[in-house]
Amino acid sequence: MSWFKRVEKGIITPTEGKKETPEGLWYKCPSCKTVTNTAEHRKHMYTCPSCNHHDRIDSAEYFEILFDDNKFEELDPNLTSADPLEFVDTQAYPSRIAITQRKTHLKDAVRSAHGKMNGVDLVVSCMDFKFIGGSMGSVVGEKIARAIDYARTHRIPFLMISKSGGARMMEAGFSLMQMAKTSAKLALLANAKVPYISLLTDPTTGGVTASYAMLGDFNISEPGALIGFAGPRVIKETIGKDLPKGFQSAEFVLEHGFLDFIVDRKQLKQQLTDLLTMLQPEGNAEMAETETVGKKTKKVK
Image 1 (cartoon, rainbow, N blue to C red):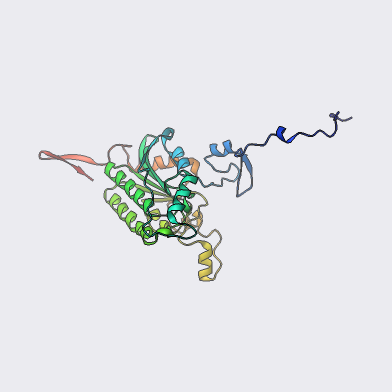
Image 2 (image 1 turned 60 degrees about the vertical axis):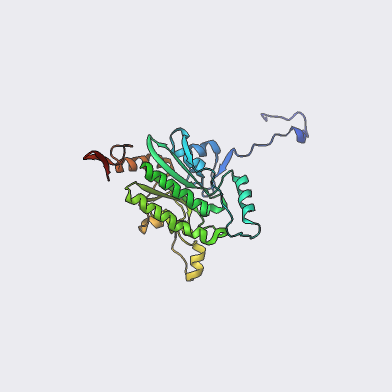
């Protein structure tokens, strides 16, 4: 005997009576295909609870993860790109910038901020891949340079979170100049003995890899991130040979000595805190001691 018996047959729900499942309730891992709800995915810092695949996230999510209570002061939030070359491809460069700004609600491919991480002062510049592939243009270089200056002036550790396809072709030489510009600023930061940590995320390629992304006092990465100068397909076509398994993955790059360590995103905040505390034994105290010489007080590095 059946437990359920339909009394009325041919029941049809009218279209206006049907309820659609709201979008954004579920997340499907691109690696293991496991489906989980988005709340669980966010709880795991946007990593897969099953295989630990690290999904790509943007500056808003990284700031939320790193800064205490998501409180921070954004630096130079309104800088936007000019069009010095009057560049046009399928559309004019200013038009492309305007459309991308409306779509992403970002001014450009990097955001910089100052706040506290477990009570430790930190300056962070974080790239957004969804803004023209995280490409490095003049605004990206300028905002990173200003963030480095802020960190150097206030003697606060600097964290760079890279996620980029490389230089922005619409700015040509102006884009390439940012490699030298940011590298010079980092040299000044090193001379001031202010710590610089570079976090490479998926993907970090092109001129970004060839400049500030690899110049950290500590170069670290998330698991599985693609790290390299040219992409694997370009390299394979150039040398005409098959590439090693896992070529340009964070694990491959670590094995060959270009990274200091790989950090799981769920432990990122605490490991960064431990690292900076080790570099600054007195916590967030001023990184220079003072001594009195005659009637003047000077700082000793």
